[in-house]
Image (tube, rainbow, N blue to C red):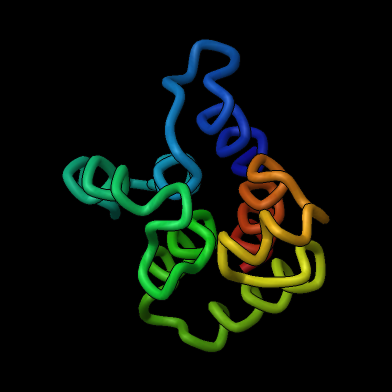
Amino acid sequence: MFVQKAYNYFLGKEGYQKLNCCQAVLSAFNVQGRISIKEIYDAKSHGGGKAPEGRCGALHAAYVILREHPEKIKECEAALSLEAGAITCREIRRLRKLSCAGCVETVALCLQKT
């Protein structure tokens, strides 16, 4: 459910507002309003390789969602690295193993398992 929701947000499908990778993952996993609308809005600046340390925006959303569970963040980093070959946006794009939509799905799937 969350994976499809994140994907729909990212692509603006099925009536969902089109959001960047970070916003899409945050919005999909905003259960019980734990993430503020302001925080989701501010994540607009964390897509397209602009997340801290150049990391993938979808992965950065996992950092926000799992901020109190650093061991689970490592699981999402490992999952993305396995699928995409890297965790930074620039390197993921250079390698071309996984699209941005694929990164959103991969991170969302990892988050769904946690």
